[in-house]
Length: 105
Image (spheres, helix red, strand yellow):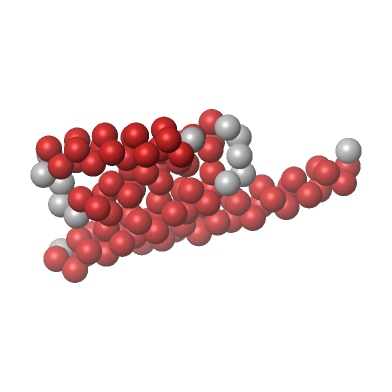
């Protein structure tokens, strides 16, 4: 997974750079965390939620930077904050359900 994630990150850095993306480093990190989250979801790992939470943190930073320039972006910032709470709840609940299922079997 690490090699594939590194390759995707490197490729998207150059793609985002070609499009003159603002805040290139956090934007590239967002691609990395998104890729990791999708990979972990595909593998049915409960840690997918933590990867999505990491992506939410990156997006919160990006939208906070945008909100400083234009306050109309605050609603998007709040949206990603709610996504972060939801992803953390999902991880906690997944682990709780796994413990319950382990006791049943």
